[in-house]
Image 1: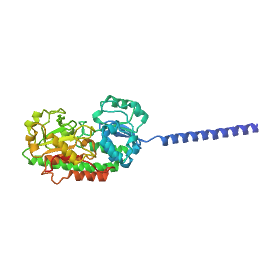
Image 2 (image 1 turned 120 degrees about the vertical axis):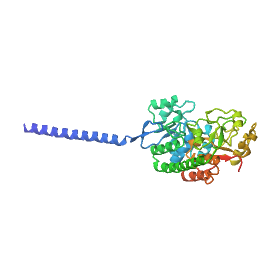
Image 3 (image 1 turned 180 degrees about the vertical axis):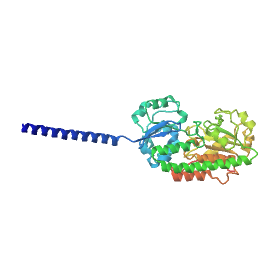
Image 4 (image 1 turned 45 degrees about the vertical axis):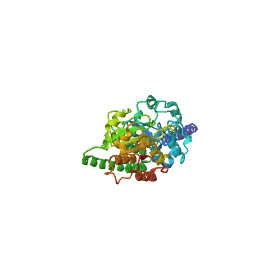
Length: 389
């Protein structure tokens, strides 16, 4: 009987030990699983959506190549370690950006995932890439391919480069987008400093411009034309004052002769009859071969001036006040998508109100920004006068 009790006691002890070991193993497994689960944080994007993201973002996708400069500014030397797709092929769509960033980074390893412009972004490709964040501009929010990315649970975040969302200020929406991204991507301190610098420049522009408008008896009139076609053709104007360039001209106190014409091409007779004080042409490296208005990292002053000269040969333009007074100017039209867009805002304001902005030096500010914040060296031309007055 005693032996039987001893055996039962031993069995009980073994059972307790095994159970304890099992509980310990389970606890350890649960603790290990808890420690390996990626931490997340919830943010509000520029569309007002709640988005949950990893706190350690390693793989970044943007659906538009124009965000290359912004990501370069925020990420610095980590750009090609973390950016895995720019949507479209950068070399095909902006050879200027491709060549410049290729001087510092390996741009050929970046994957294509389709164009957001023609709504061909591949959700299958992006699921395969498994990004930690997908950056999309608010202007493309209603694209079906973008909606599908959200539906399949991919981490889509909306920025707002030029105030397409009416709830955002079009002059500051890109800076607000940068602040948001800097926080999300883990570069808050650097990005906040960079945004503070740019915001201060825009604040100063508006302060001077508002004072100029109050003290002036007449608003300077301006005609804007997009130079993505040859000078023999008529490019679109920007007459919508709710966002983009139209909003900028209005805030700077200009009388935009294209106001009310949206993104249509303005009838040449309207320009001749309006006889604007100044004319501005927007350019970029949209097309590597056509005779278009170019600005960017590899454009020279001579090239920009020579192209602006071609506009003066249009019928009736030699009699315009803007041409007679040498007030024909060009600037990089994609400025609102760039972290250094404030310099183009300074340039535009300086041309509208030359006396009031005589102490503002857009090119010096642009070079300073590059030296402080950009991972690439400054080069090229981002704005130019037809004639040096």
